[in-house]
Image (cartoon, rainbow, N blue to C red; front, top):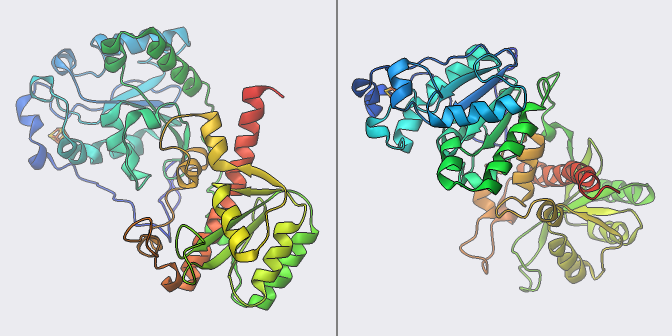
Length: 405
Ligand code: SF4
C-alpha cells in the first residue's frame, strides 16, 4: 500500500529493512533519569522540514522542547539568514528523546532503542526534507534506508539523498555543537552552505513511486540471442555503459580468471545482461571496438579484462563514474557505484544476494561468482551498468555546472 510520502521498501535483492515499531525503553533506561521523558517532536513544520539532532540537553530537558540551548540558537541564527524559522517552518526531534545522564553522548544501544520514535515522528509528520544533525542522527536514520556504515559523518555531510522509502530528501550535516566546539570559520561556512542547499529543496523527490530498476534488466540466457542484441547495440548511437562480472580481480591469473557475465546499458531504461559464453565474446569484441561512447565504474578494470581476454582495447571511453565522483568531491569512501547510486538516485544497496559469491578470501583469491544463481547474477550485473549510465548522466551535468562549460 502506498501512503503519502512513506513508501514501504520493496527490495528483491536486499535484506528487508529493519522496521522497529516499538521503542526499547527497557534496554535504554534514559527515561527514568530525566525531567521530560519521551519528549515529543515540536515545531509547526510549515515548510515540512524535520530536523533530527542528537539528544535533549539540560535546558531542553527542563523546558520539554528541542534545540533551545547554545547549539539550537546557533542553528536558529543560520536558518534565519536563509529566511527559515526553526520553530515555525520546521519540526524538531532527537535520535534519543530522553536526556542522557550528564549530557553524555548517546550510545548506539540507546540510539537503536529509540529508533522507533524517530520513525514514528516521520510517519506522523511526512516531511519533505529530513536534516540529520551529526553522527547520532545518522546512526538512527541511515540504517533504515542504507545497508552500509552510516559513519563517518564527514563522508555523508552535504548530500541530498532522494530517499525512496520516505519520499523525502535525507540531508546529513554536522551537529551545530561540533561546529561551535571546532571554532573553525571554514567549517561554519560549510555548515551554512549545507543548510542553504537543503533549504532550497522544494517538494518531495518523487511525484510517483519509482519503478524498481531491476525490472528494466533483460536477462538473456541464450548466447546467440545475446550476441544478436550486442551487434544491434554496436550499430546504434549515443553513450552506453558496460560491466563485467569476473572470477577474480585481475585477468592475468591464468585459466581460472574468467569473465562470467557482462551487461550493456544503452539508454535510461535499456539494459541487458548475459552469460559470457558462446557467441557473446566475439560480439562483445565488436562492441568494444565500435565508436559508441562507453561508460564504466573504474574503467581500468573493464579495459584490462577486455585487453587480456578479448585481445582488444576499448574504443572511445567517455566516462568513468569513479573518477568523476573523485573529481567532483574528493572525500574518501564515496566513489563506488553503490554509494553514488544511493546518494544521487536513492537506490539502496542491491548486492545482498550476490554478496557471498563476490567475496573471496583475499584480493589474490578467486571469488565464487561462477557459482552464483544465474538470474541473480545477471540482474546484479545489469543493475551495475544501468546505474553507471544514470549516475554518469547526473555527474556530467554536475561537472558542467562545476566548471561552467
Ligand atoms: Fe525510551 Fe528513547 Fe527514552 Fe530510551 S531515549 S528511554 S528508548 S524513549
